[in-house]
Length: 332
Image (tube, rainbow, N blue to C red):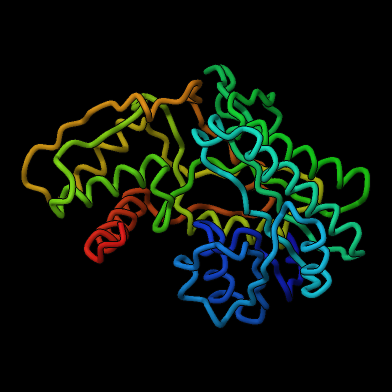
């Protein structure tokens, strides 16, 4: 195993989001000597981080405001930055491509430039995405880090931009970036716009009598490799503590299935006694879909020894229970 980098202060962009909130909890629980700082916009909801309020230091700023980033970096002087903040929903990127590019590409450029201007030397995890690979052919499976980048959505283009900015800042300025290309990851708090969480929310509503027993779906034939978010954030910690700057790594889970098979697994957990109809909603179909996402994670495993631990059935069950609780409280 590689020698671990000493980390005393971290800054998480997107700390109020799905992955950022889990990462903050993990660091506080498993690495209690590390001070956790989070970048948030003043209007960001704090629902996901209620369990850590008072144990993390929050800073109001915006990725699109360079001055705010320079100020926050000067205050926090982090040893590691987890750059997770993004406009991360593919369908929204088709409707708002410029906003997606502005948030993700310009925001990342601002962050890296702020690090350079502040004269600090943290290791920076730049969270790219498996979407950068686009639609691959079967003879390219499993997808390795050398696979060509063929983005087919504004979101994917923005993630190529983030990815290449991190590459450039390492080689041109010596900024210690490490890139991850994360494949599908899920769990409690996953946004309802994402496929398995959307299905789980609908099922919870059907069980509670708040939705007719019709479950709306998009393309059920896409193939995805799933990982639990709690395994994902362990991987991210290993990334910044163990991996050399300048590298890029695929990270993904061990379970590959179609969206149809995932839905069948979820429906096997239902409490509703009647039949549930499945209806394709044209609004849930993308203009161009990426339907084959199976990664090779050999490079990351060799570098860190990371292995996912949480079965995907538990991921789905925990996500469904999360939505059941919110539906019962009237908050979903």
